[in-house]
Amino acid sequence: MVKNRQRSGEPVTEIPEVAFSAPAGRPAGVEVMTLAELRERADACGLSTPHRPGFHHLLALSSGRLTHSVDFREHHLTPGDLLWSRPGQVQHFGDLTRAEGLLVLFEATFLDPATAAAARIEDWYGPAVRRPEGAAARALEEAMRQLHREFGALGGLPLEVHLEVLRHLLAVLVLRAAHPAGAVDTDREGACEVSETYLRFRDAVEREFTRSRRVADYARSLGYAPRTLSRATEAAAGVGAKEFIDRRVVLEAKRLLAHGDRSAARIADRLGFADATNFSKFFQRRAGTTPIAFRAAVRGGAVAAGSPD
Image (cartoon, rainbow, N blue to C red; front, side, top):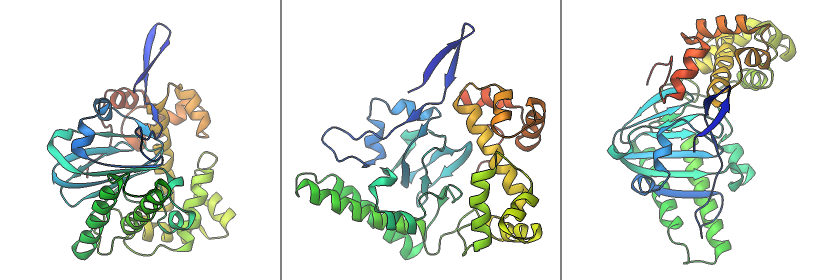
């Protein structure tokens, strides 16, 4: 999975992008397996190194413990936890021999548009780990088990019918995962209804963070006072508007540092900094390490400058 490229006589290790690939004889767009089945795969060892899938992961742990890193933040999973990582996020698995559970892999296009919208599957800011409780937890567990049973029942129905059953069962699962009643999240967003002000600001940041890091610019373009944006962002995400913008810039910087071999100057230009010096100062202040040190750490399989859950 890891590609080595040669530059100036030295190999440069990049974090690979991983496309969805259905097993032979299986429907494209979705796959369901146990962690035991995942361990038996020939390429399972590559999961312990950072990679960037182009599809969703829904992982429910039933026993044991598992450390899983998503966008350079470690999550320590225990039975009952549900992890949802999204396309484009850099991730890697910890020791898979100490955990059992079910893993669902799916492409966004496998779901119908209405379900995808209702489940907010493209919400990269949603919490990576949720812990549903009580009836919600039991319903989620049954939805995942039923999807797993149907995935393994190939041949029991005509293929087109089998695909539609899988699509509907996956829809039930992602809707329950996106709205787990009684969930206790470490992230404040998702614990209550978020305001339209925050959602508009969040979407604007996603579009414009490489052009502006000033709250005043977003306030002006959206028609709000800067204080209004900060209050809405604090209520929804637990941080002020400026902190929210800076965190998005840092995340993209980490992805660029980890995923390719761009120089600090090129990354600075990509993120809208005047020069590499300003970018390096910003990154070290916000991430607690230099860009070079971060790149070296993450390519060694480590999680740099981030507090674990």
